[in-house]
Image 1 (tube, helix red, strand yellow):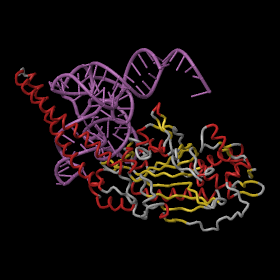
Image 2: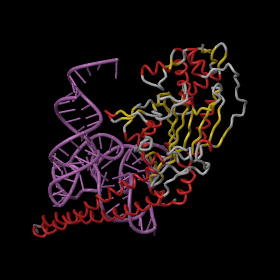
Image 3: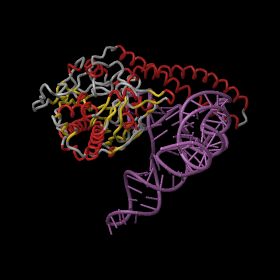
Length: 423
RNA sequence: GGUGAAGUGGGUGAGUGGCUGAAACCACCGGUUUGCUAAACCGACGUACUCUAAUCGGGUACCGCGGGUUCGAAUCCCGCCUUCACCGCCA
């Protein structure tokens, strides 16, 4: 959620930014200005009434002490009138405030200047292309779902039996590969200075709201009605919320956190050939990196995080490219996002495996995550990125590294897997 | 799940109807003293909204959360949440 103060001072920038996003409901912006004005008027008026009431109450106390009962009684009537007026105003103020907030919730983050305009993923900019040649496997190459059957790596039908579609069961060396990747990613993050956390996998409504999953991504999350809790779609949610309602000191920056969690996504309505195998599943594992940073440094940090994810791809010896998302494809809460795509050689497709974003103050406004800047408090910036998401990385590893003898395991993973060939 | 106790500022903790946005102590910050450190002393020390040209100054709200009583609530009443202790169940 953008700050209302930001609206007051940056009207033109907001309108320009929303155009880059191809945002349709521009009239909401004017409505926000209108309600803001009404709200402030009501606030001032109410404060004045309350001030009068407080003053009178004090005087009534004094009158009683001075044994001037009658005068005190007369003043009580005055207070009663004020109270009546006050409660009407208070009601109006509450309504206006929540209407205003509802509107603010509907406005996405303003894109960074470097974000290209565009309406869909077609318009994303290739920020860094793959410089080598893409692997060509020839006719006999198998997509990862066939390789999975051949080597008993994971089983989707078994997942259907236990749960339903989109819940793969990893087995044997496949399970081991999964664990190897998680450990490798966590170790790399630790080496890069991230503090490891193991967060809860279910979160409450306040938490989901603060990082922006609610209200706009309601349908994306699994919801446990009995306890009013949501299964996390990403570790970003619980990890960033560790710092909800916090005031940091400048020397606390940067806060660097990492965590491994399973992620649960309903992915309602997305079925078809392009979601076969591990391309899109309801439960997958991911190591997330999160940073909380000073506003002046957050874009340097974003590039540092992009470099970290790049190094992971390189160590895994996977062909990848980096996209700068266009306005139309940018997530609701993000100001700038770089997507990482791995080339999956048998499918001959690019698969998204990481998304690295700067949210600027969009999350911290809801999180009330601030830092001390001289006498004032200011909102910090939050950033996060997948480092990395597992299911699709496994898909790419299987496809790209297939040989007649089995799947070659990248060198860097071998100490984690304990084997060099998955067969 | 049951029973009991408790939730006050960064921390400890006082405060049972007005003089309490909140004592005192500790921590933090600024200063005096000092060869340096320490000690001692002095001062400042919550957040949000709002008025204002203003990070000067004023107003309002906040003592777990939400309601209520009252001219007036941290203080009284009701509901909820959380924590702790004991019991039950359990990886």
